[in-house]
Length: 332
Image (cartoon, rainbow, N blue to C red; front, side):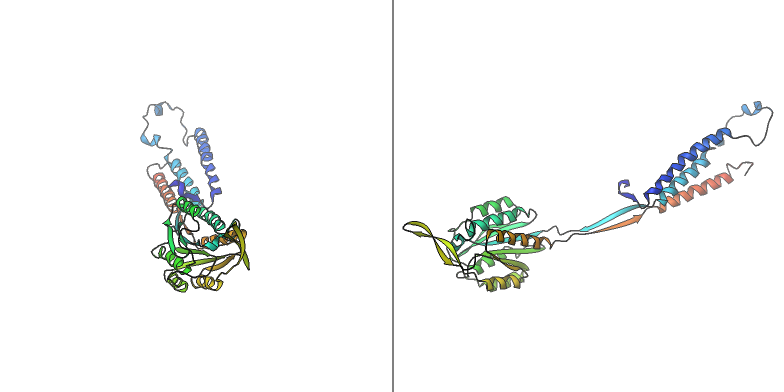
């Protein structure tokens, strides 16, 4: 209990030095004290046995010193504290829905869009050790690579192994989003987030992207959308009889759709036109979601000097009663 005690006026504790000073004064005064009555011979008194009063004659002074010490400590105002803290220990659940269609091999980002997205997403996962993560990939169809997990090692391994050609080609944005939301709908986390990354327009799948966004909104899932690709055209690797060659192909990203999805769920749309911009986008999402967690701490102080004052008064009262009764002297 003592380790939880602090003092509002700790400097007043220096007054405790007066206690040993008064004790020294008392001892010296007792040695020099003279008798109230004079006798020519003390022989008769020397043979008298000592009574219990003689042994307890210093009790009155001890009581006053104890009372003084208690009052000084009480003046320093000892206080105990109790703390109530509320923290959101559930953390944040995040599912990354990533496009792995053939267009993600375009090389306007280095070395290509898909590799750049994998690298930045991996850094994002490493910076959020307290959150559960999941991974959904989509192109012409969708597939859950990693269900929600706190095992970030598995998440990082799956991101590293993610590549084009695992599933049929195309861009099923609605299916990818719906699958990601389904992984979050039963979550009890304080914040449920989908980060949807794509470089194209919805041209496959059975779920309308707007419907998927409405479902996300129903379950309280916030969606951040990222459109990857430069403006205009981008170099895309094409297989020819002479090997792989780069051809300029038009960049088509449905920004209207991605913006509507993000806005309807309280998220935000971003456009990543370079590796640096993509990295900045993930950093901004990281800051936005960290700001959602609030920890509030309430600290209450309790005054503990009342018992000390009560004990001091009790000791002074006892000293007064003993002095007026049992230890009454001729000079009182």
